[in-house]
Length: 213
Image (tube, rainbow, N blue to C red; front, side, top):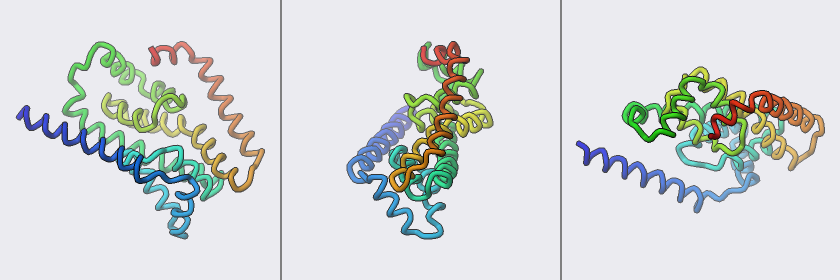
């Protein structure tokens, strides 16, 4: 039985490595190329885009290129909405995939530091997920998988995820939309949202230090 688990684990690891290699070597698409491919579907292009974004945690497609392509294809407002919906879908997929594995491995002892982080996430999941979503140093899909493995409450996780990715989502959408035409009003909105995030971060700086240490 133990040998079977090892084989399954190795097989899964090799599959993940293969997917990462395949995406990096054979799917080196620019935002412009992604945009052209998406809009070629016409009226259903938003659904295609959201669908691709939703399965992104499985195929390891780069978030930045896909998000910029959304702004380029749909403009700032629609792009922000579609990116946000896609990101929410991706968050759900990664969370539940990790939850499946957490049933088997989540209660194992992975060391004092890992256990401390798990306990923090369980006790104050909303705040910590929000911080990790807002700060650009944390990979989106990695945060989703960690949240699922540590069993953060799903409701708290989703609300924190949607609120936390909003500033970055708006920024990527603006970058994509600006390739076609630049709008200072949109830039002002993003600066305002980011300023609010900075003020909240300063207000809760002690809590933020906890998650980084």
